[in-house]
Image 1 (cartoon, one colour):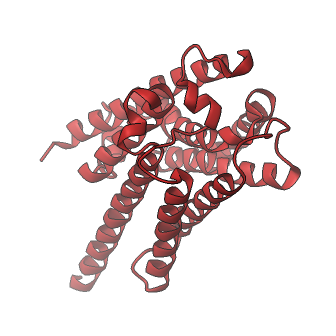
Image 2 (cartoon, one colour):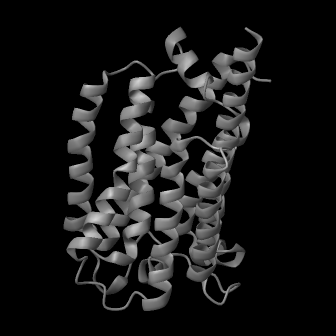
Length: 276
């Protein structure tokens, strides 16, 4: 079992690596969006055309992702109703269901003709989902004792506004909404912690090690890896091993591992209370 200082170092290293890699992906992606006729210089051509890495192994990648996300979302709600998960799991359930619905809509309507941008309702929905990132960022910085709740919220609000504005100014096309959501949430989760929560002080070591668990660490590393590889290497190998469904599967594994840990921690706390 790794020591607390090693756990803190691993946790920080993942945040730092995710920050650099996702920022690089964002820069390459925004550069390719400026190229005419979907002729990318950096990203996979099929990914730029579709907004996803579609796999020939499935009749419809979007349908497969929609079913998986829907099952995971409903499983979260059922577990909450049965008292097996805390009420905070509603965020994960909502994300799965929204993510699944987006896949369903894209699978049903396709991506042709989406250059006109989003309507008001869809834009509001996008902003609500993107807000998961700044809200999680604020909570993590408060828990790490780097900011007060009011200061963290004051920082999160303009970050959310900037993320939404960046989408509408540079990205625009609905086919790219899910990738932008993933990039935004990952950046909000990783960059502030990489910059403000280190791995040397006792306070930072405790903050990071108290949340560290191997399944969650490995699942998070897998999620970041898939986010990076899908846009760049779709034709090379991602399509042949499942396409975008790999991301949805890795996301499900990550949420499941965090929920199992949270449930275990809560069970241990209840057991300690009974013995006192």
